[in-house]
Amino acid sequence: MSKYDLIYQIVRQIPIGKVATYGQVAELAGLGGQARLVGYALYRVDLRSSDIPWQRVINAKGEISESLHRQGSDYFQRSLLEAEGIQFTPTGKIDLKQYLWRPDPTTWEP
DNA sequence: CCGGTGACCCGAG
DNA sequence: GCTCGGGCCACCG
Image (cartoon, rainbow, N blue to C red; front, side, top):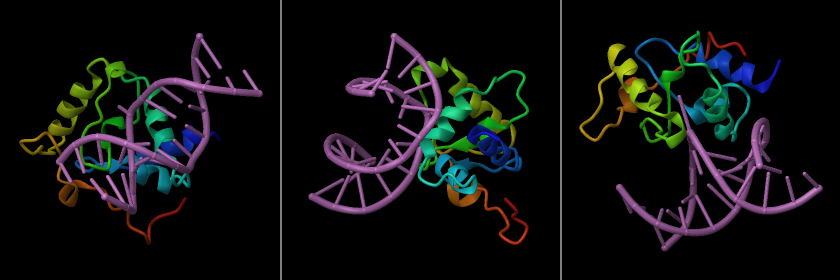
């Protein structure tokens, strides 16, 4: 069981229409303080044949993290989220108060 | 082995 | 809002 597997396991639990931040995923995976690792794990996901909803992970500011290396997958990410019913503000951000995933503490089992 | 880099985050000015 | 600085750690040359 690698650290990446833990991360993917968490990401798979994010429901449709909700999002989680990199730091939040790291925290739930027991990797507190290692948000960068989450970004790295998602970078290695194969976009086409993946069963992981990588698009539901955004940064703490409520934005999609853009990068030169992503070659447009960041733009693709936005369209996927919009297709799930998530609306963006005029400045291209997501309202975390409305869309942030809050896992039920009672149901939660690591 | 070592230094640079990065889909990150947080607190201070 | 902004920029800086520090912390984090796998990966790569």
